Length: 74
Image (cartoon, rainbow, N blue to C red; front, side):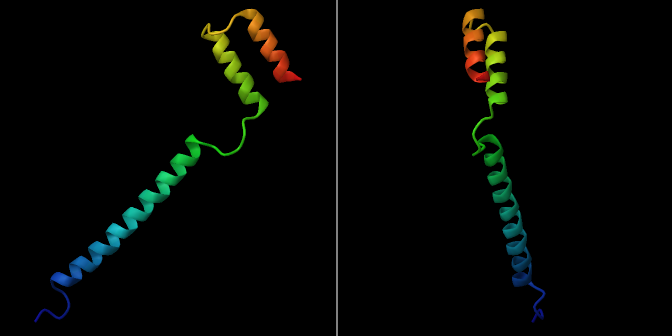
C-alpha cells in the first residue's frame, strides 16, 4: 500500500496544474481579443489619425484630405 502518495496523487496535482494553466490561457485570450476589438466607438481624434495616415500613404489627394478633415472637425 502506498498511503495515498502513489499514482493517484500525481494525477490530482496534474489536474489542478492543467486547470490553472487553462484558466490563465482563457483570461489571456479574452483580454487580447478585447484589446484588438474595442467595443467603444472611435473618437474623432482616432479618425483624424487614420485620415492623416491615408494621406501620407498617398491613398487620398489634397482636396479629399481637406474635405474629410473639415467634416471630422465640425
